[in-house]
Image (tube, rainbow, N blue to C red):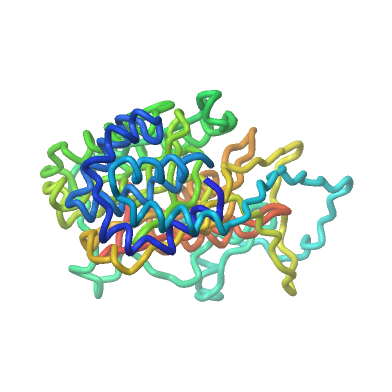
Length: 426
């Protein structure tokens, strides 16, 4: 769908949610191939008529450039003339000019220079406390790896934190589901995610070492992703203390209330991060109530490329010889939510969603060494999971990833945890 058409839907969202009668539309939209049967069934599970109308408007923005005219014709054929006229007249005033999105070539420097060789290296070994005593507030700088040390000492052994740390007493401490989408259907227009298998292997080994029961699913469609996540959420977690979901795929922006972004299945259909997280809500997964639910998303948040800005201290590119980073990107969708939807979702609790990149920007993946985010997350977990809490670890990851590459990337997270979280390492 064209950007102007998406903006048109967003401007009229409140009225559409209020007046749209969804029931007569299902068969027509299916017959005219506006949505698949699976997508319609997914919309129907949203709840009340208003909830379904809201979800329909959101999902309509992810369809093709003919979606709006088809939708308007469905409104006319079901007698919803006021809404049809509103959209048709507004659409007629838009002069839509197709934009040819072309990839931006990354120009490699012929002779990379190293202007930061004089920076002091500090040890990254977990048992090295000398540097901490010298400068407790400093990050550990390694010109080859970026800054990965903690900015302050926050040990799990702090006796003043009793009752403010999630307990991880079970072994395994929880399930870890990894969804690794590498090969996409040709009709999706999405490229093969070369290097993702390296990420998958790293995460599988890392979370096994952190005492999780790891399961891996490969090349899932959007419907299959939803089914796998529902199956995980509906299991009995009463004897476990935590749950982790790791998704490696292409992604894009999408309308949201609490959690931005959407993940593509191998069929080219997307499922929003918000919907993924809400599968694990208290009502759908009662045995996970009060327990931390962690989501790690390696996917693009959009297609903007961050060139960064000049700072007083030059940071390393941190690229392996012969590396060829590519983006898990799809065309940018500038969607924003409206106030009427705020009360429709339960307030999340005990949830953390870690994104590989800032919403709206690409997430870089090296074909030989895997994605910047997963590579760094794995390394920082290895070095610091024994002593640092999750938020401190993610801060180190953001700091290290931000130092990489000609184009820039910075991970971030949405945190609704109520306590500090330490991984189980022994």
